[in-house]
Length: 251
Image 1 (cartoon, helix red, strand yellow):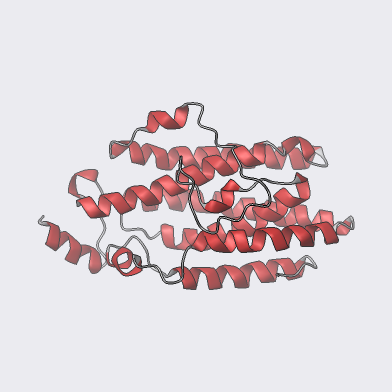
Image 2 (cartoon, helix red, strand yellow):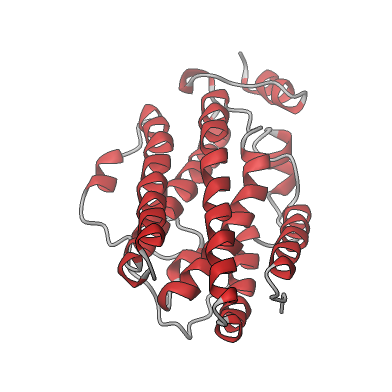
């Protein structure tokens, strides 16, 4: 296929299935999507691993350990596809500091770090068990919204990988909701509300700018199917509903 005919094909809802027929610009944007997901999952897994031993009970420790394991496994699924494009997957097997975090008071908006492609929210530290569960709920709901779009991405092998990953990530948000229910019943609502105030704007920033210049081209390539603004609005509605059910409020 000529590059222009592929563009027309994608604009009409077509899908690609092999690195061999992927045009250069499409390849670059596709790899950014995959790297952001992989790096965010590895950083999220590493960060949550650090709070396992602060869990209030054995059941919570098991749930936290499962989340750590499954996020790493989810990253591996997508990393395998990156390798098919010639990405240096070996760098993910070294001692990259996935648990590295900024100061709690930092505010970097949606900026990425210099050393990896994790979403900005994964550069902030967790502050104990309750704070970790609040972050896991809010970000888990955000991932759920993002997954609705990622499962339709026009690179078929990646869409299939995301469709396998989506229910696993949804379960992580469910575990967080159950965990928060227990903590609110124990009278920790005030500290949890403070965590909501901290994490809400940082998770919201993970949806990116509402005026993205690349939105139209990503939509035309089938790499996106909804705008940043639409996704953020969906997340806000779902997160507010989930918090209200727990006796918490959005900022």
